[in-house]
Image (cartoon, rainbow, N blue to C red; front, side, top):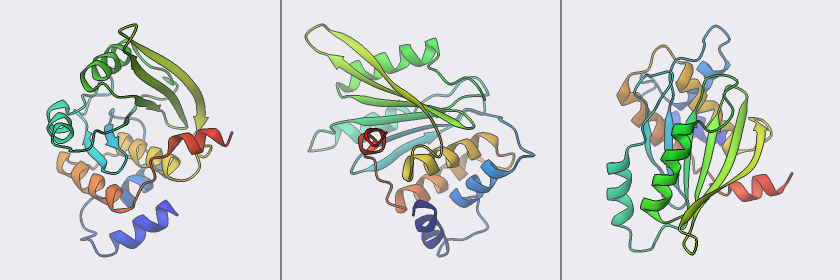
Amino acid sequence: MFRQKLREKLKWHNMKKYNAIDALLDYEDTSLSYTREVSCFAVPDHGILSMTTNNSAGAVEFDFFTIWEFLKKQEKKVEEAFMLHSHPPSMNQMSGIDRNMVYGWCLALGIPIWFLVITQDQIVVYFCELDKELKQVTRDYRGLYNHWDLAGDFGYLSDVMYGLSMSNRIQSEDLNTVMTNLNESDIKWDLVSYLGSW
C-alpha cells in the first residue's frame, strides 16, 4: 500500500531527481553497501519534520533547531515523536551517544519518543519517556524486528532510510525530496498497532 501510494504520487513529480522510489531501489541493490547514517524525526499528524545525514558512517545529527521551531509553534501540544536513524549492519542497539541524545531530547521536549535504530534487515524499537516524578528518562526496549515484520509503513520507511544509507548517488537536497515524497504518501504513525499485533 505504502509503495503503491509512493508510486502514484511520484508519477506527477520530475523523475529526474533522486526520490523515495530510488531509495527503495538502492536498498534492494546488492552491489551497494552501507555508507552513511541517516536520521528522520517525525510526529503524528504532521509527518516527517526533518531528514538529515552528515555523510558519516558512524554518526548523525538530528536537526534540533528545525524541529524545535516547528514544535513550539503548534497550538496543540504534540503527544509523541518518532526518532529513527540507520546504523551499520549488525549494530542493532542504541549506542552510548544514542542513549545520551534521547535523554536530552526527552528532557527538552517533555514528550514520549519512539526511538528506532534501523540496520539493513532489522529494526530495534525503544520507547523513551520522561518520568516527571522521578525526574529521569526511562528507556523501554520494545523488541527487535525484521523490516518485513513491521508490516506496512514502518517496514517500507525503514527500507527507504536504509536505501539512503547505501546510495552512492544522493546529494543533500535529495533528502528534502525524499522527505516530501514520504509525507505525501500518508504514512500511518501508529507504531503501537504494528507492535501490538505480535
